[in-house]
Length: 409
Length: 173
Image (tube, rainbow over all chains, first blue to last red; front, side, top):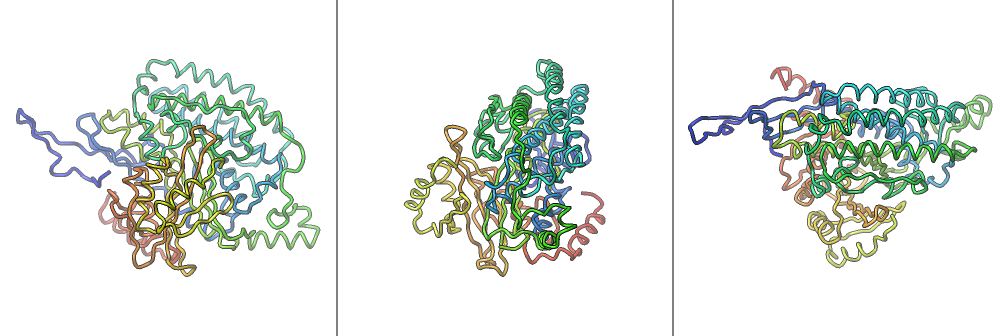
């Protein structure tokens, strides 16, 4: 990818019959409804063909990695919401797991917390795929699928609202488990969702999967081969759509994913349609995981018994001197992981999200690095669209399912 | 990590005995400290001969006043197993001193390193020799300091102001 900002003098080509043509530069974004945020792509066009596409990012950069060096580990949690805000619960859980690994307390986490996190993680995946498919279809003119998808997404938001009070920026689990026990109606809401959602999924399936227009707009569009996908570091449906069965949940299981029975859907064509098929099947697999988890949701403690790390119960803070002191120490100084470094990866809806944490023994992370899937996946765009039509750029962006909050951080 | 990393480390030790400076194991993760001159050769060897085809992450850390040399560039490299379950990940580190912050780019090995190296350059000012398009990626192009360095002053707004005013003058972009 070279630096090409403007039409260069030598972009003109003189053809055999003496006519002279030159490529046109077109700015797609940063304010464009189909770029899913503030993404700017400088397109160099020969008629309607894309000669070169150079993505420019950074419009939403907030310096989350720098911010996190100045605050305690618990305080970093709300920042993780603001990355992939489509599935913020998945970012939260990923971060919590990384801190738990750094502290070396994975074995202390109660089963109830882990199982709940699995349910929430998979709800987050469904939520993200619904937005991904819905907006991809909307960009290509299929308005109705979008409405069906967003209707179900509301139901997931309702579940999240019941457990943590927030719909979008959840900041929900805590290091050590859950901040509060689950509300009584949680199980009923999840079971209700499990009952209703397959109907909507098949409706979306009916609207798109065999829809001639949808197939023509996505099949053979934005193709990336398996070799290129691995070389570029793609993960998630973008990688599995090219036939590579890599899924962090199977590769290096966390939260007890090894105990759940599910498949990793793979499609071989590497085009936008394959990625769509992967997402659809992943939602069905997620439903099955949620069902297995809710059937085996154990009773018992919801947070680990680790006085140095976990805040004491609110009532004890108000009534017991020792608890008050503990509360102060954890809030003011933070818990202090031993000196060391860990990387923890989770399978976010969009691909592999990993946190690389370095502790210098103080209450604040010495370095927090976030490897967001969208950032790396975005690199594939130039390769996907060069030589195709302008309209296919929209299909490519939609099928990569990027979120700019995570690219720019 | 079900597959043992020992054969990988032995093979690296045989091939690059002088360049493997340290091996650490922490929380089930293996970290190799390698010399920076050999980094692109080690990465190419890992990819081509040992099948570590996937660059999971590339980043840097600034250890200002903590240790010397000051910078570390960190590579997380992944090998897909024949089965989904048999996957391996290794962490490579190289040290860079403050005076000589240049290192070979690994973009010839993995083209996915392109943006990751640009981000490291953007945030730390580390130069990657042989990178096809090394320029800022997240910060504005005329921004001068490197934000993730530990001596970056977060309260000093001058650099952002200058770059904003310049953009206003130019009236666009």
